[in-house]
Length: 136
Image: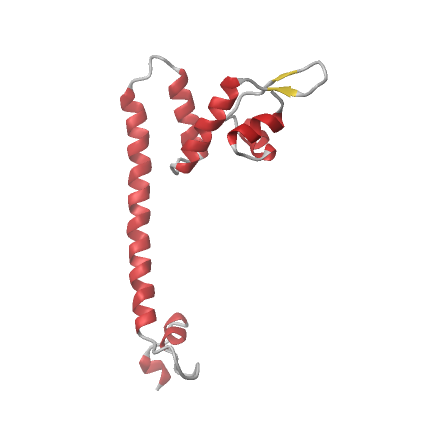
């Protein structure tokens, strides 16, 4: 199948297919005598695998590692699990950071009445790094 057909079946743009090829996530395809790239079901499955990895938050390097591990029948599951646990730990750290950010924003929103002139707005003053003492 040609690149447009592959991209359509996988739900990605043609440029995405080319990008993944350049990054080593998809093999360089065979070429037809006309020069067009020729893809098969194996490339479609690999492209779908890459898309699912992306949806799960794996980086391109981690996805490349998963592809490499999957291609080696001697791979032990522990390697795949370890890689996944590292990604999970990163996600959990980001969730903690987002929780702190949410709490800070909620505190800011609650500090302001939401009405009146901008002068003396506690949100603006705190974002500017001013304290009550600075305004006196």
